[in-house]
Image: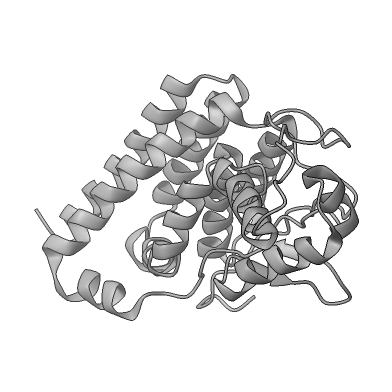
Length: 265
């Protein structure tokens, strides 16, 4: 795997015939979200608004495949022509993407590094400190929410990343990135996943630096492993306070290494 390009986790797709659920934690089923039949005016606009609501609420998450046009038409009580018109609007806005071979998927957040943000973190120590503080705020919130909202499948995926971390001597930054992406998915927050997408490339560069240059001693690797295991344990126990505290402690430990390296005080 190219270590300069953060990869995406292979999250399972929602099949064409499966409608979204209103509550995370339930297995996908044919049960539809509660929707009002669309009034017979500006039907394309109304369809777009309903689908946008599903995306904003997390019922359709980034990367999820939407139900087939026929199913959406039944859910919204409109024609397939109106469904196509509404979906086309959202594709034009970059919120949906076409799937090769047919179908539609919710667009993933951008994954490339923001050159300006990355450069700022590299040349300005205050900005680097700010970025680490922002990470602590966002990720402690996300892991707390994941403890409350994650499905068993979500927890299993996070555990897989911890196991990969334990057994992998290479691509450590990528494995670490995948761990944080799995937590983002488990949080069930579309807003957080999009926010993470904005800084994802820069975060990967930070993780790469941490893993390949900053943490140079075997004891550092052991400490990082222990910290990630503590986060996983709290998630498995559905203990939001402990999960958040473990994430804050992990990033505070990272900060001590930045200070020791003279990157900021």
